Image 1 (cartoon, rainbow over the protein chains, first blue to last red):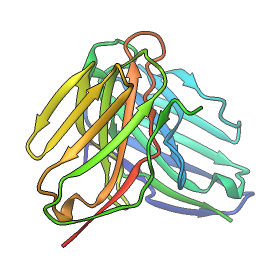
Image 2 (cartoon, rainbow over the protein chains, first blue to last red):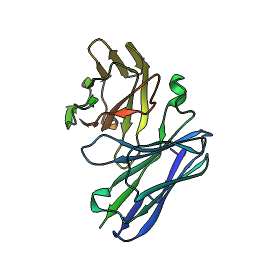
Image 3 (cartoon, rainbow over the protein chains, first blue to last red):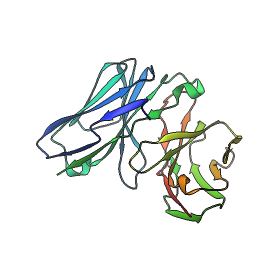
Image 4 (spheres, rainbow over the protein chains, first blue to last red):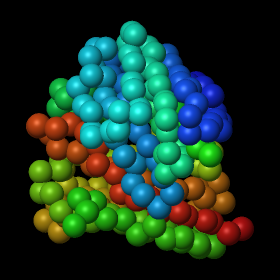
Length: 118
Length: 112
């Protein structure tokens, strides 16, 4: 439960606001992820960082800007969002990324930030 | 066509029943298969992890992979109300893009 933490847990913002989501992992992992979870849709991978380098950027609009200052912290900076961006934003971490070594890539998720854009 | 298909449910069964949850997939390159459980207002937690075809058992849970049919299943025996959650299947390839591809999730309720 405390391996991956996310703050805030709930966020309501207007379309002109700027806010940031924070994720911290206490597992000593090398890879961190941002996912978007919308109702009735599969989890959508947004960004992946491995050893603090961005390795995946899945056609995410520029109003979402990730930052990974070190291997334990990951941020998602939000600006000029749209109502359709309202969703649960999940952070995850794994020991490795892209090593093909089986469970070393197992992802552990945080509790998520429930974002509502008005 | 979606890479991974999962019936979203909802599925409601009485306590003690055997539950069967399933996913189908289209990409034969998937080799690692996972089941995550997500309680309301929580993040997904890994429940079962299997590689290639076969069965894996962990307590009341059994994961089954049939690569020839591109079909995976999760069985829950002696289901309990505490098993009520959304169950997500996920899978990935061995080589190349390592990202997990998730199913939509099946919402399960076990009625006392």
